[in-house]
Length: 240
Length: 109
Image (cartoon, rainbow over all chains, first blue to last red):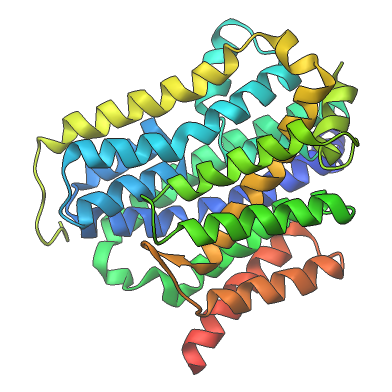
């Protein structure tokens, strides 16, 4: 047992997956609190975390509810923000090659954090460990803390007071950082982020992320060097 | 319980429908033929896409509030995270420092 667990703990993918699970799982408190503040019931809020399980889409959905928007608008915002998961799904299918039930399960666990943890590894075994550690870990903690946040509700006050929004910023920067290995990925990151931010006031929430995705895809398609693909390409090479 | 104005049971339809759409989207990605992705150009597209998405998500979480760009305590979280990452701090410490930075700036600000 001891040797087994210390063996797993020596895996960088497992360590990163656990760290990400704690960092982003805790953020479920603010989702739970926002859900009930928007007017959804505790059960409806928990159902979003259990079934939808993709933070950006969940926040978008609740944001529309809070703004007094229509159900169709909430559906549209959540769906648009979830489109990037299809991209992750393609990448995870290539990396993990799950079959049958494993495929249905891994699809549900495919989110920013699990995909990024897997893509950050170079060995195939590590990619799998990273995906499942982050996927299962975030799922458990995200749902646990959503329920806590929904029950505590307004007693928590503004989630920003606890620095939870700062934790999310640091977590995404931490996921991006290992990919900024040379000039080209850095340039791409700056360009994609800038264009997305310029778009924010003009388009519906969720769309700026998709615009960034299009910029990234075009950049990768037009690029001749192996540069911007960075670890993603290496990871996929190693997977074969 | 704390819900100030519950929006009601008809929202269950939209909760379930939106969940079905987002799950279907995830599954759709897994259904793309694997050989498409084996092409080196697609590998570059996938890699560049990942960087662009993560960069946009980072910027979004730092600067966006609703549909507006806002400079607030989250900027301190980003700065502290970058310094910690440059100093090779472990991921969890980076996240904790980010949270502490934005909480402290709010406390003092």
